[in-house]
Image (cartoon, rainbow, N blue to C red; front, side):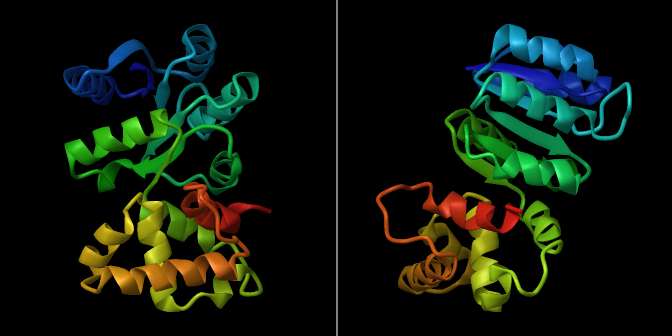
Length: 214
């Protein structure tokens, strides 16, 4: 599985290279600035890109903007944002794009190497991997007249765990309730968001992304 890494901190960049290489990924290029990132993504068209938000030369939201530009040029290009910050405007645009895998993890909340590697694989496979804190910050932007207002506190909690990629079984274990109870909560969430019954497994992803659309 071919990976492009964009991280301006040398120690962290080298650490990511070593970590992903150890777990069977091929790091085809690792860059430390926005222009080099765009060139690398267009050249290699990797299976997944792991990208920091704040890159030179602007040190603001360069990484996210480059990721969006790359996905416009290469539709469906999988991108996993790994950052200390939640940049709401561009994160909203990235996560609302249903073409290809996307993810957004916060560096200081990644406490398990295997879970991080699984997130990279999930995004590469076209799935979604989002930190619950990212979802929480994005959802606070929305007014009380939005669908979020219709969810109970427990449903919001279940939705946050769904966003982390947990199955109903895993959510039930986390909340110490039955899997049947979680099934009822997810069905209620889908109904309140206007997502009809479907064999499409992406309905769980759409349940989260529905909040992020303008």
